[in-house]
Image (cartoon, rainbow over all chains, first blue to last red; front, side, top):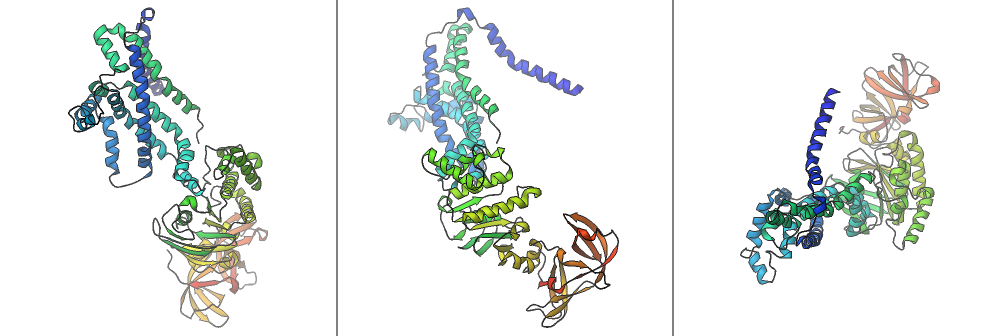
Length: 253
Length: 333
């Protein structure tokens, strides 16, 4: 009983500590003097617009890979697993440098792409590229776990009821893995929207919210970050919160 | 319909069977029965006749797995309508008609988790019938039910399957299911060792493995002492029992002997063999009595009206020659 109380106390303390910075933000925000700095709105549009595009790319490319990893065994699978995790385990700044080395104007891939008209430094495409690299592993790992939780047998029954593998995927696999997929989307959304390190190196422009926050802090001081910081929260959090709440209401099959 | 199936992995299996009415494939757990059904449905790589090489979605089979495999995110009618094409209203109407056929019309809106095991099974049957199969495959149809309701549900299921007019192949280790079959096949070590009517197989199992599968309690290794045209005398430890002669049995030959517990009778006239009562267990309206006859364990199923024998009492028992079934000796695997 006593040890339980100690545990509860320690847990409460950690929770408070975790919440402190957010309480601090509420406390310190100069609510009467909030005013966007120049370019803040543009940064918001850049972040939301390109993050949505990056998210779409991550889902379109990541879903088949996640399904393949969940449903197939093959030699060297561990290598594919490791490669998927690699961008996640690489420090963001290092990841940015790696992308600059490959896709920069003098990079082995960047140079030929540039002659084809695709410039991957300081362009919208570079911005999206950085976000895709930052967010894709999170989505793939979640989606794979979600697919693995769908009983194989239900997919097989779907087939034996005369449906094609494609129909079975949409009518059985996706509905039954929807929560896990949604968690993956939410995670990828937050990662992509908040990505700073990778973006900073290869796409300083166009400026999204994270880089603009950094610029505001450097050029104008701490007071200039509050409006955009709040905007950031308001934009980033609804999607994951909604999905989190939905998952609590979802009946357990 | 004649079925042939050759499977290498995960178990080696070759099965050739005529399918008519309700056919039961009886085999031990782990004998590869599920693999066989999946192979027939095209879900495992195998040679199958008919439909060799067809993808599962083209095979006209209705597969009911163990646990029924209903889609948990769909209501009963949506489960049934899964295989149906057409407008939503039309699919709904046809699904309702199929649910009516299995007596579940009023449960159309329920999710699988809101249905009992037996109801889930019937939804799964309706769903399989919606696909208009030429063959139904049932995997362990009694596994998810408790013993109390099992027999009634099973009889109901078999009636529904017969009414559907589609041949069915049920794989099971449960000889209660086998007893209801139109035709019974016994699977041992990856091949069919015996097939025929349940009555024939139950009365004359082909070998000791088949005997165990059809629920024979007493299986012994014995030796033929003498034999003539009608009777053989077989020696089991200290017992000597008369049996009906069968082909290929010569004096001195080792045989396996199968005696159903129901066939063991008590003697009050001083004949028969002495045995001590080692255990008594009530089994419905009967008593299952374990007798110890000079170290040989003999199970007997006695009517409860005879009264429960006292533990340790010495009785005399016998078995009519017609119930002492001789089989070729086969190593216990």
